[in-house]
Image 1 (spheres, helix red, strand yellow):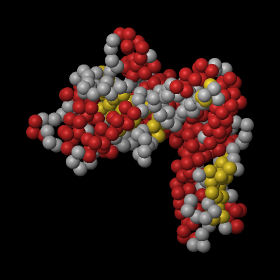
Image 2 (cartoon, rainbow, N blue to C red):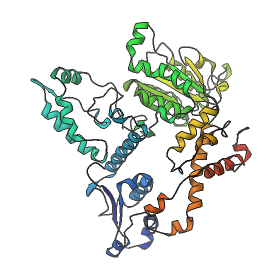
Image 3 (spheres, one colour):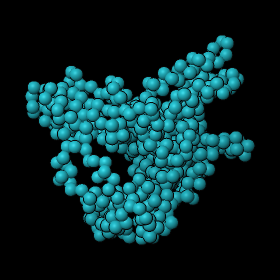
Image 4 (spheres, rainbow, N blue to C red):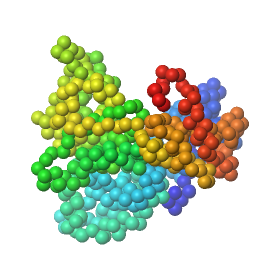
Length: 484
């Protein structure tokens, strides 16, 4: 925490009906920070250090949904009452701070990549300089930024220092501030530390993903940098060459090899709006409604450009058509997608990314230049890629000292990235089963002592056990691909 030790409190009154409280209490008793003594006063209280909240966020939100309507129920953070939106904002700040630590880019992480203003924090990138009839209003801008920092709970970020705001503003000339105020950002910044989907009730967060999270796909990363990142960051190069940016890119390859991960990474690193599209969300039984929803997605992207529209498993909604199937529902949807991606319509700085493991099913008209200009294969990782992916997933594990991942990495050739992620996750569970008794753990309402947690160390043998479990077929044969 920045200058303070913040704690989180969830408190609610008990009802007169024990059965009504049974579900909530069964959850509360398993949480660290549960204060059983408060029950005697007819209330239930959970107090957690802020660092503990991140891993329990889903449980805490579900619990709050159960009890929020009770008179006297309250959430507080650092002694200050918050509502559910305030709690979610605090979690976004936590996630952004965690991404800062994992990226190891230093202060560069806090500089906006989406055309906003650099006030030392991504969350402040939408705050425009104030310019009055007599020039920039520096005191007003400082006050506005301080107020926004308080509203957005940026004090929870260990990397944000409000003291730096003043010198940053004073270091800019009047002409610079005036020009910044006129240069309106062309896109919505969204929640820093996450990439967001379409605005509105369906908005959802997507995990922050950087190139550092992608292993074994260096060639594909370079191609996507050229196709998407270059036109966004240096459009003058393309203007000089007299060419337009590519309109679409298709990623194809076996399941679990990183197509979706790569799409999220290139969108985040490019600083563009990321709009993930799920086919079932768009397809309806009503005539014309599916096509209308698709048009709305492209319109939203154009309003918030530069943007990337990402169709995962595009083969489910854009399969090959024949003359006898031209009136079929998904055939009409495919025709609409072809029309929207056609060069007749100026999409501006909107890029279409799509992923599939069945390119043979796609309508051939989609694959012509002008729609999906580039088709990139995402194969299974080679030996070097397998080792790199293992290192990526193992960096969060509390590995035992002296463990050699290179030796294990050589045994992973032939697996997919998803398989390797499974091995890292399963190794952590193997470590837990080896070190702790599950029955004793669940039967104890107290938090596990820090000293005991420090003894949890994932060893090479744990990783080998996880690999053996994957190879021995802990899942039915029809879930495993040949050779994995």
